[in-house]
Every structure is written in structure tokens, then in C-alpha cells.
Image 1 (cartoon, rainbow, N blue to C red):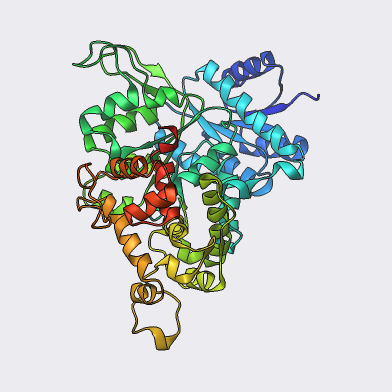
Image 2 (cartoon, rainbow, N blue to C red):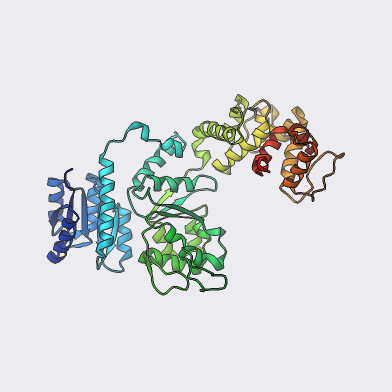
Amino acid sequence: MTEQCVLIIDDEPDIRELLEITLLRMGLDTLTAGNVEEALEQIKEHEPDMCLTDMKLPDGSGIDIVRYLQKEHPQIPVAVITAFGSMDTAVEALKAGAYDFVSKPVDLPKLRELIQTALKLARDEATPVVAEETSDDDRILGKSPVMQKLKNTIAKLARSQAPVYIHGESGSGKELVANEIHELSPRHKGPFVPVNCGAIPENLVESEFFGHKKGSFTGAVSDKLGLFQAAHKGTLFLDEVADLPLTMQVKLLRAIQERAIKPVGGTEEISIDVRILSATHKSLEHEVASGNFRQDLYYRLNVIKLKVPPLRDRSDDIQLLADFFLQKIADRWKMQPLKLDQSARNALQGYTFPGNVRELENVLERACTLCEESTVDAEDLQLTQNMAMPIQNTQLHPENRVQERHPELVTTAEAADSFDSDNPAHAPENWTPNTRSGDERGMILEALDQTRWNRTKAASLLGMSFRQLRYRIQKYELDNV
């Protein structure tokens, strides 16, 4: 295979020589340039596989090289060399489209890793992809214009190492987008580590992120690796990052800038190679303005901002998503294929889905417990907001229309909901379980035992449909009892 070529751009001859020797030892061909003008001439004449440029050049800056390549040769990755501590210039380069950056004095092992990864990316992009391997739709469903635009943007962002801030409403699929960026990136063979920042107790946040040494605090009975170390060579996804306490935000900022972490109770810093993706349903700008989020951390995380559209802005995808979720539910429940009738499709199409894709899946899962003969209709969906319906029926609340047609369905839906609350579960008056009120799992087991595991009789005893009972048996893994 032909040797790959890297263009080195620096106005200091000794730096160019050091970098050239390093790259030659890696088996790479090299070109050199001392300023922007020479670099552009070399690019036009030779089209190198990668560029490595200093930020400060006699007749311009490395940003000029980045912008030129983004416009004329976007397939050529470019890494910039910044002065020590100049994170602002590094962020500016990443925003302009740089693949990554290294700080002076250059750490040669890190530089070699960066170059190898960038060249692999360039080589992979130059290799034709077999059609059957392109299975984007298997991970992110959607053919609407906004989703096509999102997928194209994800593909571009996957080429970079820049931090990406993913913004979108709850349930819109931010983690799925983050995972897709990871899967399409050169880091796809490394781990993808998602973490819900709001779910970690404040006193354990530092230990969870950076790990700890044995004996560093009460309960630290052994060394523990943190999330940053778990994500080494891969991607760390910080979901609900706005919920991080301010004390942790300072330490996270330092870890991102220094690319190193210090475990709780440790004395030495550990280098980490992690790409940071973050997300929240809140407005980080508002959180910064209100003093709940550090502005300097905001700028480090928000190098590139990616908005995930809500489901109401991609209504063309609702039918596609609904069919996908019905198949998923049928497979999980091991039952015959489920389908929507036209009334259900119309109702879904006219609903705004404040809970987005997550709400759509939950609505369909609930409807599948209520439907008859594996066909979901509009009443089974129990949609109550902006539901598409004829004007003459608007005075009748959707739940009343359900009860008018199938009075038992509302009762069983309420019974199902009450199992998850503090209220006593609904059951026929002639059967009183020994299990404490509200313990759904115990109540179901008791009913099954009493009917010798006749599920039809047990469902009747519990006051729910057979389908609801089957769902709960699977939910609590009672088949294995």
C-alpha cells in the first residue's frame, strides 16, 4: 500500500525536523512548509493525507489552514499545535473543523496516537462502503428532512474529536444520537460510557468520575476505576450535565483541559484519552446566566452544538417509529405481530407528543395491553391531548369514549396504574390477597398460585386482561420462579 503522507506546517525549522523524524519513524511520508502560503501550495500540488500545523505562523494562523481544508478538501484531517494553556485557541480550531489539537511541549506518544487515528479515519473514508454495511436506519429511525439533516451532521461530527453538546427535549433520543456519533467515529472500537449526572449522589460524584484509592474514605475498601478510565480510548457521554454540582464542574473542567485525572486519595495524575459528549434537556445558556453552571465549562463542552428535533417537528416519522416499536414489543413479549388500524394511525399523527419518542413507545406499550386480537385502535391509545378527532365528537373526552365502547378497558387501565402507586390494587371484591396492598409482584404470584398458574383465571381474579398479566409476568420475570 502507498505510504500515507503528512504535511507539517511550522515556522521553526527545529520543530519541523523533530516532527518529521517522528513521522518518518512511523513509516509515513512527509512534506513541510514554513508558512500559510507554502502550506497551501503543498496542499494544492500533493493533497496530503493529513496536515499538522502550528497555530502561530508568520503570514497567518493554523485556523487559516483549517478553514481552507474544510472548504476545499474536507476529507483531509488537520490537527493543530497550540501553546501551552491556550485552550481558547484550541476550541476555536475545533469549532473551525480541526480534527484535534496537541499542546506544546508536544507529547510525542500522544501525537503518534493522534496521527494514527486521524490517518485511519482518512483511509476508511477513502474506502468505498459496501451498501449492506450502511445500516444507519437500524440505529436512528427517520426519513423526514430534519432527520436526514441530523444524520448528515452526525456523520460530519463523527470525524472530529471536538466535544459536542447535544440539546433536545426529554425523550427525543439524545443518548441515541451520542451513541451514533461514537459508532461512526474512529473510536467505535473503544467503549461508549453513558452516565446520568443527575442520578449520582453529590458526595460520590468525584469518586464515580475519577475513581478512588483504597482507604481514601470510609467505605473505600479497594481501588476503583472511575468513568473517565472506563471510557479510555472511547467516548464518555455526560447526560443531564446541567445537574452536576458546581464543585464537580471545576474538577471536570480541569480534567477536560489537562486530559488527565487524579483519583480520590491518589497522588499522581493519570492521562486519559476520552472524547466528551454531553447533553441536557435544560438550556445551558439559562443555567449559566442563573449561576448554576460555570461559563468556562460551558464553552469547553459547547464547542459544537447539536439540536435533536422533537417528534412534533418530524411527524413524517411517526408511522415508521410506531411500526418499529410494535415489532419490538411483539418480539419482547413473544407474541404474534401487532398492528395499528387506521383510526390509531390518524390519532398518532394528530398528537403533539410532549414526551417525544419515549412517550410514543410508552403509549404503544400501554395500548398493546388493552387491544383486542393484536390490533391497536384509537381508543386503545388513550391519547388526551390534541388528538385528531371529528369536530362533532370534541365534547366527549377520549377516556369517556373508551368507556362508552369498552367500559372494562378503563377499569383495567386504572387497575394497572394503581399497582405502581400507594393505592390498593384493584381486584374483584370476592378475592382478598394476603400480600400487602400495592405489592404488584406478590399479588400476581399469589393469584397465579391460587389458580395453579392458569393465567386466564389469574388475570380474571386480578381484574386485568390476559395481555396485561402476560406483560407483568415478563416484567417481573415470574416465568423463572
